[in-house]
Length: 278
Image (tube, rainbow, N blue to C red; front, top):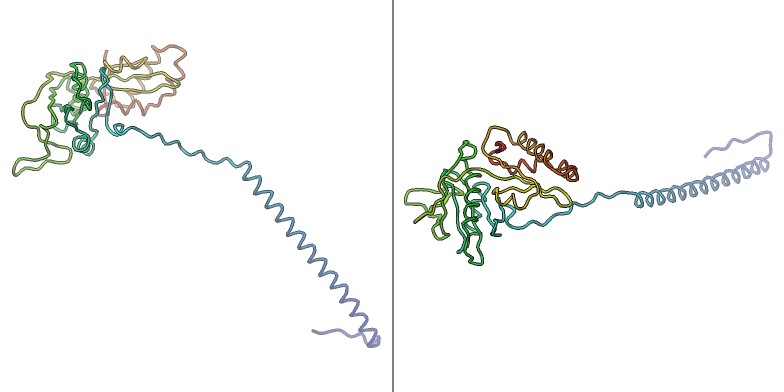
């Protein structure tokens, strides 16, 4: 470190000058250090205060409430007029699962007489007598969700058999694709079963969309329409259904119906197309 010496002053005078300067510098350093410490302290206090405000006022995203569904909701399903649970496949995978996992000894298996149709099963865990009305309702669902709908058929034959008549074992030299099964023995038939479904608006705290055989929907929904095979795309048809229902609904139900999602109605329209039936 270099020091500049004033030659006009004596050595003691120079020493005394630098001693005083060093004391001033020391005070400045101590003042600066103190000011820095106070500044850092204020910064910490501000950070703590800011964190507290964020935690206090931050709106945390609400966790989606996961509704625990019933096991059968992965399939097409409805409860018949006699309160039998009826379930049907949506595709090859659910067809396979339905027959392999959920078919039991007192159930009945339905299938439309057209290639690629889904299986429908009347569940009967208590071994009750199944009424003609429930059989007919299940036949209607089986034909309506078959390829006969997309083909524009007005009616289709449908048969039903017992669980022991359904097998995954193919004849020698043949192979059963996923979702397909062999049917053995005598079949009971519903011939010329008309294709058609009901889509209804069940009014509670909100408007709930339900679908199924017309006789079932008619009993459960406050408002409903009948649909059949046709050329209107599902979105256009769903919007038309909503308009028709609103036209016939009580004024106090309008807002609930308006809030019904078009997509919920679309899901119930077989084959992605259809028309309103008179």
